[in-house]
Image (cartoon, protein in one colour):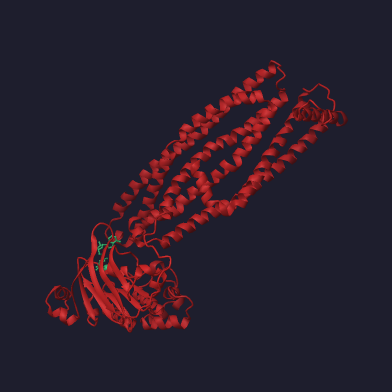
Length: 610
Ligand SMILES: Nc1ncnc2c1ncn2[C@@H]1O[C@H](COP(=O)(O)OP(=O)(O)OP(=O)(O)O)[C@@H](O)[C@H]1O
Ligand SMILES: [Mg+2]
């Protein structure tokens, strides 16, 4: 219960108006239902002619009589008058018409009651999805090495749906069923408090039995949703790696892995479903049992002619009692849905409440880049082991420095630290003596152009991919950038030129084309600092020449950090730093380094660059 109230406080405020409206119509529906069912009393009396007493009209303000007795008496008087003047059959028709009219009204208000929950349901789900999406954009890269992408997808789809169900159920639980129960119960007490007292000795027993089924449901749901996330991750991997899977004939291996997970998920969901389905027959059986007991008890009262209850009123009482059973049953069903929803909310909250490790100051410093970038005794680790161990490096404005070294030596990591994709644990990273942690990430990243090891493109047109990082750009500027990046020609050769859609992650382009587009994107941004993480994939000589040319044009007049795999591309760099196990072990320009006969020389020899 605490759980749903918390959930409500979090997501309901924007939709308060609709909650109130829905609540209001639920009340009206319940009252109308009491009256429409009430027509059954005179109908029975007319049909069975049970009412042989004659009635006198009692003034409404008579002392010493309860208002209920007066109402019942006067209603009876009214109907006996009606039978006298119109005859039994016509009275029946009038009563039937009244029943139809009241039912029409009742179903109408019931519809409105649900109608106003629609904006709540759709709104809450939208809000949660948007919140997750925005949080994903905010979180540091570190978060995503631990969370699997498919699992996050599962939360956005499956878990949000569970929350939706649970919010709807809790609306019923808080604003509908209690209203119905209170109004019907009130009617029952008015009709016969003795009988009602009896009923309420029987009902809690039924409630207790139902409650025991619900236990552990939250835990099982949590596990099942986790498993679902795992499966989504596998699908995501399969989709991304189809080429490799096929090339290595690994279909059956991947398929087996999926089937295994899928079977486990099935077992878990079966367990949950069994428990849920059990609820229905059980409550039906227990409901009928209670009705049977009440029928027996009330019937005995009538047969003994104690004067406590009349036959027609007893039937009406039973219809009221029958009406109350449904909302009570729904309580248990809602309780299940809510438990599942809360389990899903916990999983969603793992994303929503994840703390962002990258903090920004309240009053950040302005950043300007006039002199140098300074890596000052920088230490960094992703998880356990230090990846960078005491890096010292000063990069003068306008110079080009290159980072070389074996795979895994920490080159990309060094580049990723400058735009604060990750924060360093020890040391300082400064631009002109301003620690990059002291300025806003937005300002910092505005200065930096970034061409990644894998050209990252979006499923959009070529034009939009180039214009991605820049607002208010003109067509001419985009084309200029593409020309400098040696991309204009091949773009024009595509069917729709700049408006060609490049497919998922640029899947319709070659490796070299993708790189040139991402270079054009960096050129258009015109950054002061350029980070180039060169692709490992060897391009054919022609394509390599084009990319190389494009890069050289891009590097002109900028401060560039280039992570190089092909040493041929960095011979002109001002200083080359050789990394090994997260430390700088050699530095200098190509000629000095080469003549040192150290690691650099070996690297060159490996690449045949002697
Ligand atoms: N997201 C990450 N989480 C944990 N460890 C990582 C992560 N990214 C890289 N590493 C580890 O950090 C080390 C340095 O990786 P980095 O990507 O900087 O190497 P690199 O020099 O760029 O290699 P390559 O030439 O292959 O691109 C590696 O040992 C790698 O295993
Ligand atoms: Mg790398």
